[in-house]
Length: 427
Image (cartoon, rainbow, N blue to C red; front, side, top):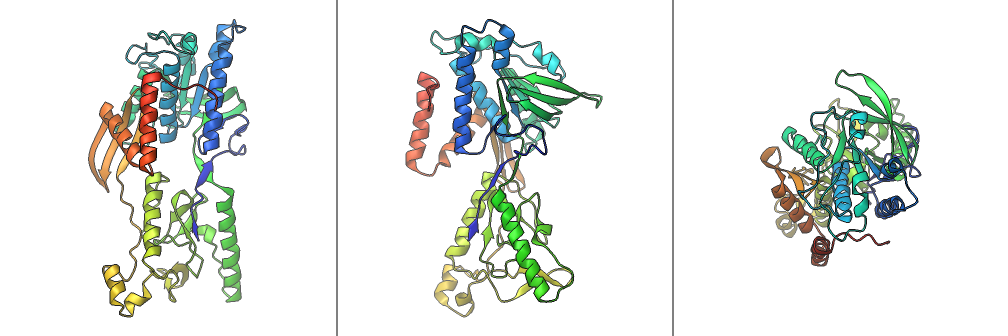
């Protein structure tokens, strides 16, 4: 059994009052994407109604708040800003910026003074061109900087680019509660470290503020706990050790060969966002597609090469006492002298543990610009922000598609959007 259920968005109202799918839009599943797209178009259509005569009401409707300044939140902010610019007829390079340079980025009142100032050269044909002066896009970051995974220079570049395209960036700002789908309360920290609560009225809230394990992951850990307790009690062991004691943030603990610890048969493997490697010398890897893809390829090789996942011997921990950790998987036939298997395994009769090779990270920030931090393991190769980073980002995006058909469809969709603009029809 290979378990790769992944994670879901943090959606518990126990952490933040009002945080639920009723009030916010999450960014995890295809259904989330469809619902979010429909809601954005609903907001635009509602704000276009001539019955709305109050400009403040229209600004409220057209205020989009994105919570979370990691790669997901920043990339969605850039994409949303591009979408709004396109359907409102903004020509790139001719839009008046609402940059907050020179202001405290954590001051909502200062940012609100800029509302209605966003303008640009409009094309003759744009479905929502009249809404441009009333539109606001706000990105809320709990930390002082965006994109903590990137180097310092790229973080600063991301903030500057977002502000240059009209995004209002609120740093050192946390959501304390969500009153309803159109109003949230923020805790804003100023330069002196003082905190104050302020409210934002908006038309849409998008939540990209972290993830948590799905319910099935927690259930699997609980089942492993129950099994291990029974086994330890049956052998008369006094100090009961639970699998959950090795877990990190609710993730399933696995050994260096991706086997779930506590399972003596070794035939249950976990990988991706749901798993965390534990044991001597292990490091906690980021929950990214790059890690999951490499782990998936590793597990496939492990199974295809016929390694025995449940060796008879059980490894001992540093104290010499019995532990949950098994010996390394090995190919029994190759050990016994099977020449064909030895050649097929290139002499590796014992499986090597998984090693993550960090190739860097990319993030789109909108306006045809992206951040590219390319590396090979711990060695930095180059950092690039701007149009070159955007070309690299799009190249990787196309290459990572699963088939030639999907690559062509993605390229055609980009070409169609460039020529005819964004599609705002219903799905």
